[in-house]
Image (spheres, chains in turn orange, brown):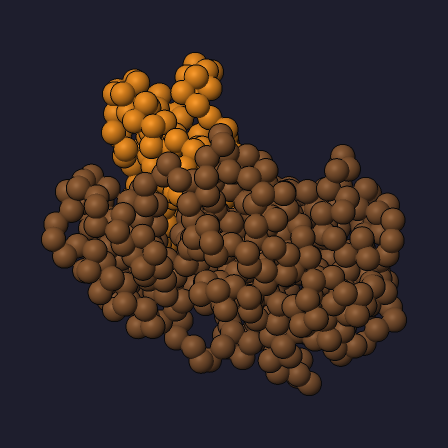
Length: 157
Length: 416
């Protein structure tokens, strides 16, 4: 079966594998590298990871479904992950989240029809000094209010 | 500047480019590693850290030197260091602060710990959400390797160490040390039954030391200036400084480094600027979300492990979350319970079922749909989780709920 894994990913995986005495220990970083390529982990990605690391596909699925940063379906180009834990909630996180729901017309776990935005509420992101905060893909943004958030959305094509 | 000031981890954090090796070295960086590798035996390093009684800064507060001492000695058997950079306890952001400003300080701490214990491979397990910090660490590792501070023959000696940065993928439980090991082995983060402790059977079944970022950052100072100087800061048996992450309803949220045993009230009012917008203080979570909250009349307490236990709470990760008098406790309860329900790994029934059940009740209270007996049920569930799980997460989920119910029962009972 053809997995369509680009050579640059294969080279990266080789480098990752060299850091561990056991191949299966590389599973999390390998899955991250695969997800970076396509934005989510396909069934075929999971099979390729299982083959490459010499572990059963079920073990890969077990891990993919355990960690919240792994996705099994495509997300929008900009994945908005709003922290709703206590420090952010004390600084208006719930209001920001409902503002985003209304403005984008989607609920948590959904993607806008044009594929531009996905929305999630997440647990503490470790940026409580900048509460309320959110992550767009891998980037952190903090000290947000509705206006700052609107301005940020404008910039995200 | 007097000598002791060098024991403050954040001493040079105002400098530009401290994260670059050149700047770090110009401020005395890697001198402790050079001193230890060239003039001290591994045992002497271990004894110095033991004498400093450096208590772990990750949450449990266990002395680092004693932990290192548990690793079997006198063999050549493979052993590992895992740096716990999976900072996930809500309210905590001090390790992010340390690693982004001064990644080489952490690497120097890792070199010293590895030298003391006879370790040649270290993994930094960093939470997946800290992507830019992971890149900064990778850069620091490359710089250190290029300058001979990592790799074979460090500082021209026979000692060598490789450091690898390993990113997690979003799971609070992986901050628990045995879950971290499982995760690093490529599995779900399910905590292991202890014993055996990681010092005898850890990563890849080898003896393993697991230390928090802030803990390791203290080691270079202890080696350079000695245990005695370290103990002069802070308390006699709980020395050095702590970096407190202060957030919530305060005027100036941020990281504040103070001697261990400093006053919580001073930390909030003098450092963090007091409660925001002229509001009053209602409650404080003093040691990360898992720590039982204190009320206004309970905050004249010293910020050290023993004092907070005496006050009925814990120092945990040193994360202080301030709650103002306009915040309903049902909101806080809802957020606390939702967090643990989301993060329970599912291995132990009391935690898996209990946290989800507590979250459903809390959501009802928050929505004003309280049923008779809900608050009692919350109390019963939390009591049923406490002490009945494999790892400390059961207690972490139960204790804040028990404290909230005990201290704010009237308010919860009025919610409808």
